[in-house]
Amino acid sequence: MIKPKSTIQAWSFPTVASDFAQRHPADDVELWRKLLTRVMDAAQANGWNKAEVARRAGIKDGTFSQWSNGNYPGTLANINEQVSNWLEALEESASIAASIPVSPPFQKTNVGQDIFNVLMFTQMTAGFTAVTLPSGSGKTTTARHFCDTRPHAWLATISPNTKTVHGMLVELAAELDIQEHNPTRLARAIGRKLQRIGDGTLLVIDEAQNLVPDAVNQIRHFVDIYKCGVALLGNEDTAVSFIKDKGSVASRAQVATRFDRRLKREKDPVQDAAMLIRAWGIEEKDCVTFLHGIATKPGALRNIDRTIKAAMMAALGNGEELTMNYLVASWRNRDMGDIL
Image: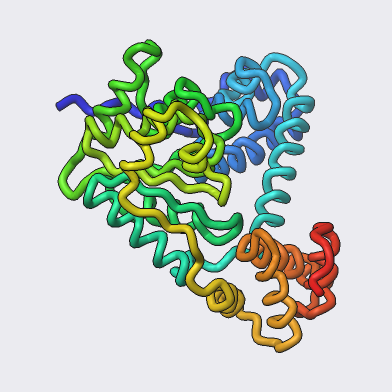
């Protein structure tokens, strides 16, 4: 079996041309050596080839290649300065990123467990299911965790720009890593990738409320022909609502009778909010009460997470602990309305 060759160029310090040191001032050459070492460290840590580094640094490929190979004929100080500025910005961004509070790992809330069970059922039975819960209840987070930890499971997100049959197929092809540019063969190529394997395959369609009826019908076709599981995730206005008032009677009946399970109700949103708050390590009574108030608003869990994160960043920036004042300021800065 022939193994594919890596497209990432190996980084090694170049053998400098004999006239390179003579052509440029000694201080510029010494700085070049130090900068190139830092560039190589950053590139190897991030898996960047020379073209990617040049793109990120805003330097033409040819110019960067000459600079990194030690044979740049122009004014070395100018390129050194560009590279130095990029490295400083890169290191500053890394420092800021390291100080940004990180959300707790995936929490299997009550609603998360319900969603997980639906997805498991869908994959194992080649089912056609729908999860239509309010925004911010944890649908996407749970689905992403499921697909990240289960084999043969993929998550695709539909936007208003990809709601048509063709737009959806293009989005699915990108998610499934399918290289097929002939529109007439696209659906079949996707179907073959989704075809049942072992314990089953699963395609999760997030933001399904954007899909047009014909696109939902195309998904039903994948379930029927290729025996894959498909789960539609969306808010209360998800695409399955077209069953009631959109599309032809025949297409509505075809889809309506195919749903094996629907999850439409959160079991215990208050307890789910409490679980997330505890995962953030927040115990002060006034803070907990305030965050529970956010849980009563649309986008509950998402808004709790984002409000805490912004409040913690502000507190850390001032060298202080998280307090009620920071949470209130964070909520108000997001212009989300009053809690009480």
